[in-house]
Image 1 (spheres, rainbow, N blue to C red):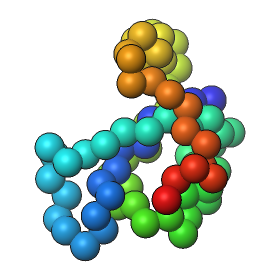
Image 2 (image 1 turned 135 degrees about the vertical axis):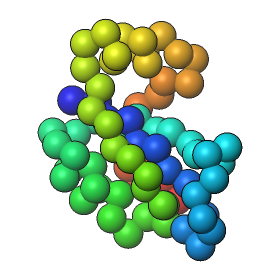
Image 3 (image 1 turned 90 degrees about the horizontal axis):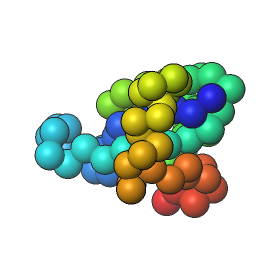
Image 4 (image 1 turned 30 degrees about the horizontal axis):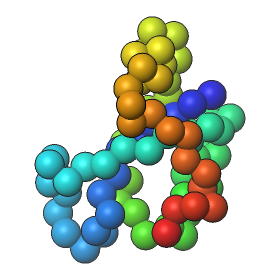
Amino acid sequence: MIFKVLYQKDVHEVPVRENTQAMYIEADSEQDVRQALKGKVLNIEFIQPLEGAHLEYEQASEHFVITEVDDIE
């Protein structure tokens, strides 16, 4: 399953909507996504499973790229 992770890079500041970024991760569950991102310096706002029409919509975006967890700083 593909998950959309909405996050902020600065964990020391209050989240500001305009600074929210998104990444797409393939995993079996939300718990697996959280475990994979554990230890990364990210302020996770929301993790959303994508399927059906919503997944198709996201895939149509030029920004849709599956992120490898090892590539996250």
